[in-house]
Length: 201
Image 1 (spheres, one colour):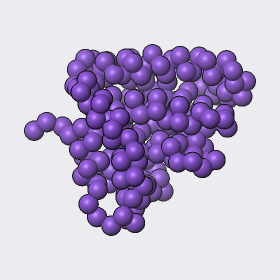
Image 2: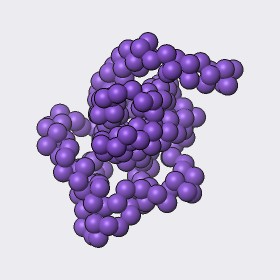
Image 3: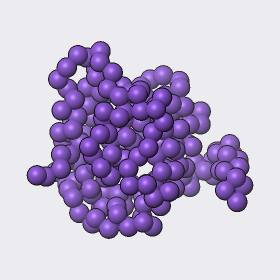
Image 4: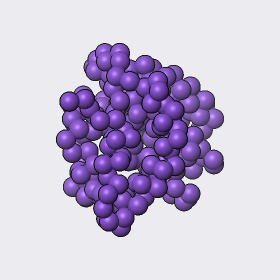
């Protein structure tokens, strides 16, 4: 039986009480390694909500996912207090409605391919590093960037969910450029990254 893509996964969560809380453990359950993609997708939802703290909520979750990929985990781990949180059904449905036209166009070219790009340990480490840096950028109060970083992270999520290595290469390219550009422009980002390196060393 073929794996369900993002749109089918989202359609499966539509029926039910709009006010029901869809916990993260429910959303990622049974997806195996693809759970990282679904978790990343849910993590970036606040970045698309027009509230000042959207990036501050999404950023740390993205960093957590990046750290686990960097550590080579096959499935995501979440603290209990985070695993029992998540979006309300109406929020997920509303976001699905917003991005469905874009996803429908992407579905014409997105498909499972170039699996080594997704499964090779070094590739996983590189993806984790980019997610950590992008999560840091998303956490910073850089004006008018939440949608930009959110859209880029959506490419990573889609590549992991659809098992598309070619799309992951595109996400790597744009992610690397974004980290380089905003890393230079944001002295605060550079300072945080330097402190993180000091802690590792």
